[in-house]
Length: 463
Image (tube, rainbow, N blue to C red):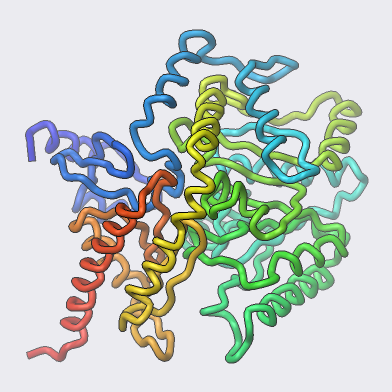
């Protein structure tokens, strides 16, 4: 390690509190410092290359080092580096991006509100829903229904909709009024012999029972990712979204589609809503919107909701919500260029065409492995769940330790993934080639073999 690298490691541990990290463990082991990126690769401060198999945090659609995005940011910096959208002010990139998103998203979504992250966007959606129901004279209709293992962010409200214990424990979350249903994961939660469609029916019935138990006059919205990602990569069972939407419409419960990870081609379609026939009242977008080159998120809302919000803002004087960077001209300019590149290069169709190389490759090579319980995914997002006993689907004890070991071995082999308890998640940049997917499979296979040997040593009796 060079003196400069060693200095950065020491200064990081001395000064930086990292998100989603064991702080004491970080003090002991220090950071992996990434210095540059190119295409699907990133490079650490020792010059070692890694395939970024999770596209950063599910987000770098165009890979790293896309010069057109840097140039778009520079051009906008030189003309209007910042302005706000409060009090009737606007800017051309924000206007053009809003127009583009209305054109791209499902019919009936007519207005866009910009925020800076998925967490802020989901937080804002709940505020909009509460504002909407107050405007309609329904002050009790405020409860939000999510699912166990959902991830919708980490602000106080978004963290309440999230259904992952680590994001709630000791934060006093969830807040009252945020409810959680069974995770729609057929492998783990279906009854013996229960088909995907029957499982979906049971989950829709569970939703209806919850609404009726709480009182439809108190339940405002259901929120879900079309494909759950950070909870372990779980595509919905067959007919799930059709049945869930039918229940919501019966009881005047708004549907919020969290497309923060699914959107802009990740599933081989423009949005998860397109793939699963979802007609949402709100769609939440971020991550691949700018390929995460700039912080930006967007809420696209229905005309029905907008009209109520607009009337209420007129009645009381303003829609009293917004952020300093709402509609930031540099972030929205980068997003516009990002969407142009996705369209010009046909990356949504490319994701659909190349998806079998990832999905079939993972299944054919690893589904029968003794440590693998399930391979699942759709498009260019996948998960491989590790088990202690394949026949019984037994989890490792403690959960997450074996996946953490595999994750570390994958990095040694030059592959960055995400370990989610005992699932390894894959989500490569949309620009990936079939040959590069083959490299991912090879490196994962080597790490899995290392892990299998390690597990055997753990299980062996002491000499």
